[in-house]
Image (cartoon, rainbow, N blue to C red; front, side, top):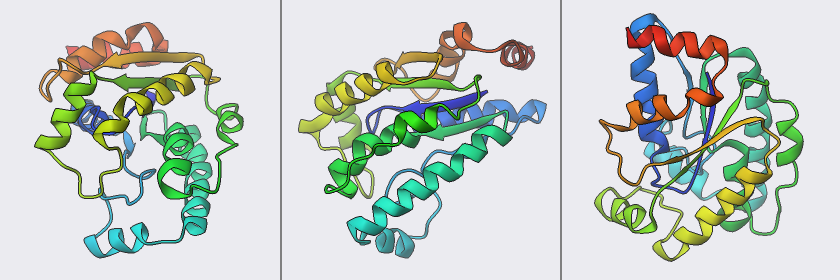
Length: 208
């Protein structure tokens, strides 16, 4: 299952990715996880000192770093049948010019979609803006990007890029009423129409 999870900060991408990872273990299915690699700083894998260093990079270096990381992960999508990329190229298209390198636009996002395996699934995760705002208050991120007054605009931008994406398999997934212990089952039910035959077999086997 090749998944690209996109959506506004606090919409639940990490929660879903971690749930899928834990769900896959019983049959020895290990998702290649790159949930935080495309957000500056990557607070999932970097030490606090390295996070600060990355946060303080110049906008030129941030843009170059992001572009290289994204093109590197094209190979990940090709080599791993089961992988989860959080945000990836669409997050960079939206967040890059807004937060990281305001003088540089992202123009390669449609091109790299032509390189994706046909089994790639694009998931636009969304939630009610009030729900996202409450999540911001209850579990603040150390380097929060999106502010409460930006939520609606950011979600609209993700929806636009989702609709424009040159990816055959895609779905929307609303997490407004979901909790960490219910998000997995809801997703596995919602994703079925866009799964390949291989992935359907995988899902059904893990349900037994």
